[in-house]
Length: 218
Picture 1 (cartoon, rainbow, N blue to C red):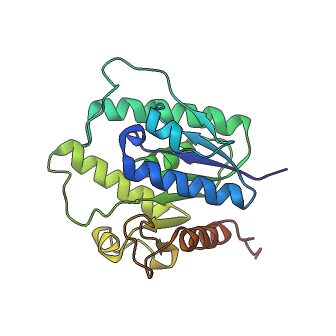
Picture 2 (picture 1 turned 90 degrees about the vertical axis):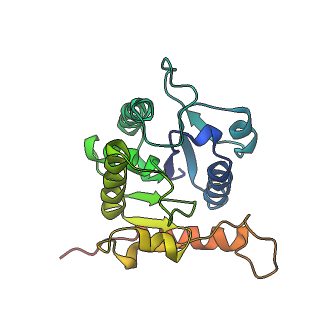
Picture 3 (picture 1 turned 120 degrees about the vertical axis):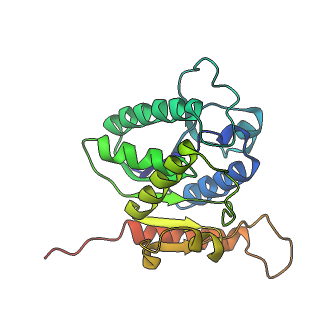
């Protein structure tokens, strides 16, 4: 029986082209290696539906008033959707034995909450696929809290995937470099020496091998 992975998209995944491409690459790579993949997303969009590989099980949350078009910054509406995704994720983990949770953007915070509140603990991967070295999220209490919980999620993750060294420097020095893999966007450049989709697949499998490695007993 195939090992199952639960991918947790961000609360804006249905509208984020960069994340959609990253989800497409990640799910394709995992399926090629024999993993069964479920995707937890806030809702489907035509772009997300078209990009997803075949045999991807997509699970969404109920439609909530005024939460259809979420803002790019931290907000109460995004918090509501994230809470619904946490509850759905806990229910999914109670019914299915996922070997790994893999959260993208604020989906990493959701993955951590699912892991903390589930009866069975499992490793989770935190990924920030887009560079964020420049603080373009603005200022304010809600944004500060979002960044605080983001850093906590990344510190607790079994493995962290970031796009470049500048983004790594943006995080707390407490983030263990041994758990970090730098994986650029294979769609960003078309030069012969760019990071290709094949490179991405190889690097991703190294991350999963690291996370799922047998733990030695004392």
